[in-house]
Structure formats: structure tokens, C-alpha cells
Image 1 (cartoon, rainbow over the protein chains, first blue to last red):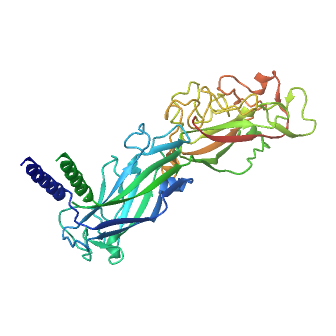
Image 2: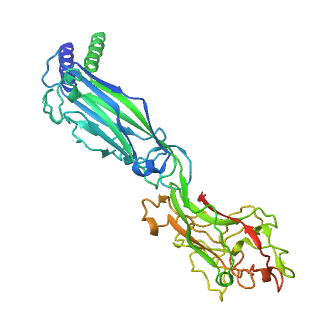
Length: 204
Length: 259
């Protein structure tokens, strides 16, 4: 009798677990075509004042598949996380300092980095213009959001998040990333670093 | 029985693990290299000639207005100063004599003309020198009249001619000796291109004056701090005057990081 109760309890628990972490998609895949390091070298006065823009240096390709389960709730999110330090002494809102050349000036803030994400259908919800990176690390920049509503591939509207891939719907599942930094003349000379993590997740 | 429960627990765990959320991620590292830039643009003839061939030029001197324009662009805090230098062929701190005319005079004629006889006037005052301790922090005063000699505009000279920078008592065009802070002894990074052009702290027009006087004793020559006269009579003896000839010297403008 006791064994039967335990079995029943197990089945219930398994069911709860199953429903909480159920997969709606069969596979999600994110491909990045760019150099692992993107360098901004400010060595002329014009670059300091005018800034440097690197267009399309990162390209993300998304593939989300539900062809096996055909679950209509298969959706996905795409976000950016910014990590500023492997050094705990780095203030949360500043770039990680690798080396300084001078004593005067301020350490650059994270939001000195500007990002633009674009594709032909303008699906990212951040719009089509450059925006400043979040000052607070750990807070995601949401490109494709989980709204609870599936916007299918081929819609060519904002926030397309249904199953699909860059091969069949290039204009919605490919993202060109542009970066821009205009430091101005008040920052401390030196070498600084940030890490950007692009994260594709199944929307649960 | 215990084995069965354990088996079931393991299976439950496997079921849960198998349905973890699908994810994929890629990382990019962005490196920003801010290289220090100090840029001094100077528009001036390579040589400024002061030819004293008329008695009025001796009396009133020769002034060359805006003969040099200095334009600064910098990404770091900076100082700017002028220093008079020469080859020292008649002594450290004196003009180089290239030639003397005729016998070069007699009696009190001397070829030791102090470099500090050159006067400068900067068009824009030094607004970043509150830490200066001398009588004259810069060259912004108007040229003093002939009848009232003053060291307000006499060029800074290192007496040993080794290029030692001015001290807190001496004159800077912008910023000053020390590394306290911007405003006190440094100008913040910036550029004449973006900071208001002609009236900014990054743009200076420099006037030059040489006033020999008559007799030619150069009454505006003063020590670096402007406190001690260096005219030919004070430096030598009554009756001294400049030996006629051709003399040369350099005015060097130095832009340096405030550190």
C-alpha cells in the first residue's frame, strides 16, 4: 500500500516537472559570424570627436525548429547580456580597465557603447537606431521578446518569434549588429574591455 | 522496496533534465583602445625678423601682432608654455650673435643680450592657473609702456639653458606647474575645434614685441618670475648698451601632459 502511494506521488511530481519545463521547440541554434574580438582604436583626434562606427561586424543567424513536435507554442527570445569584468573591483557601470596610459580623465561608462541591431524586416523590438548599452550588467537588452503570442515566420513585422530559420526567412532570422563608440575628450586614455553575450532561448 | 523508490527518483530526475529549456549563446569581446593625443598646431613664419633701422623703432620697439597662432587638441589634461632658448655661443641665457657690425661699438657695448628681452602677449588669458604663486601667471597683460618697464610679458628663460620648465612662480600660456587639478594647474582635454574656437582655452594668438630703448638696453628684460630686472645696465654697468649686429634665438612652445 505504501509502495502504491509512493508511486502515485512520483507520477504526480514527474508530471509537475514535465509541465513546468516542457519543451515546445525541438532545437534552437544561434550562429555568430564575426571575429571574437572587435577592436576600437582611437588614435586620431577625429576619431575621438567623431567616433568610430563598425557596421555589420557581427551577424547573428537564428534557427528554431519544431518540425518533430509541431508544437504551436514554440517561440524564442533573443537578448544581449553585457559583462564588464572578470575583476570584482571594477565598478558595475564602467568598462573593465585593462591598462591605463594616463592619470587624468574618467573611466568610460558602459553606456559609451552604442549598438544597433537590424534586419530587413526590422523585427528587433529595439528599433532601427543606435541605442546605448545598459549601464547595469546582468540586465538583458531584449531584441526579440517573449510576449506569449507567437508571431510566425513570414510575417515580416516586429518581434517575429515563431519557428523558422535564416535559410527560409533570412530577413527575419538574421541580425546584423553595428557598434559605435564616440568617446569625446574627457576619458582617461587606456585599454578597456567589455563582453557581449548573445543568448537565444526557447520561450517557456 | 528502497531500490524501487531510488530507481523511480532517478528516472524522475532524468525526465526533468531532459526537458530543460533550450538555449544557445555566442560571445563577442569589444576592446576600446583610447590612445593619448596631444596636438599643437602652430601657424607662424619660420622666422620672425625684427630690424631696427630707424630711431623710432628703437624708442617704440617693434610689435608683431598675432604672428603666431597656437591651436591645441588634447585627449588628456595638459599645460602649455613658451621658453626662450639659444645655442649659447655668447653664454647661457643670451641671444646668439651671428655677426657684429663694424667694430661693434666701444666702451659699454655688449653682445650679451638676455633672451628675456622678448615680450609675448597671449590673446586669451590663462584660465587654468589658480595654483600659480608668482606675480605673473601668464602673458595676457598688455605690453607695458616704454616709460613703465615691467616683467609682465618678458619671455620665460631657463637661466642654465637646459630647458627646465617654468615653476609655479613663472609664466605659462595655459595650465601651470603642478598636477593638482584642472583649473588649478591644468587644462582639461578638449580641442579648439569643439570648444568655442577663438575665445576658448584651446586657441591662443601670440603677439611679439622687442623694445630696445635708447640707448639700447632692453628695459623689458626681466627674470623668469618677473621680479628682477635684466636690462643691460642692471645686468652689467651704467653705460652698457647693445652691440650692433645680427642676433638670433628661438622661442619654443611646449605642449605637455599635466603629470
